[in-house]
Length: 191
Image 1: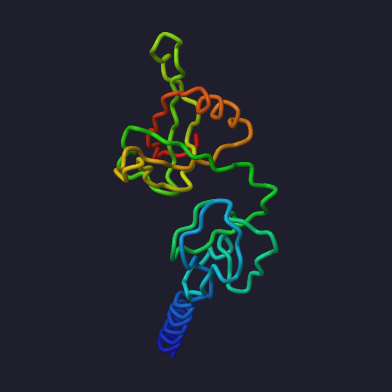
Image 2 (image 1 turned 45 degrees about the vertical axis):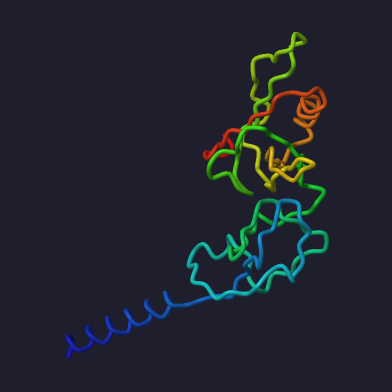
């Protein structure tokens, strides 16, 4: 009798454990890529059923109301679940996109959402350039494109990096004064 009771209890426990592990919840996922700073609306998301377990609270559920004026605070790729930390208001986003045209090819693997180091070499006044200096460390790329000449041939690459107000004057000074700008992929991200 005791043996049968133990078997029934263990079967019930395993059944309850498997039923709990198979529980899915409706969560929000990005329909398309969403850039940092882009305004968000419910139309930007689809509802997907996922099994998250204990990390469920780290993502936006399907019942989440998107507040008016909400923006993406990090790059969101199509199909990704939306982390709770990726939703913010425009007035707390302290980074702005700045376009850079570079002559050297972008590093392999650079894409929107990647982190890059931006190095600048200012003109030295003698037809040359000063030693390059690291101006932006682990800046997030918000957009990539190709710049073209008047004849349509691709000559340089253009990317937009997100820059804080603190670093903005240094970058704008470098751009205004004809600095050579190089971008190095920083896969480690922010220090």
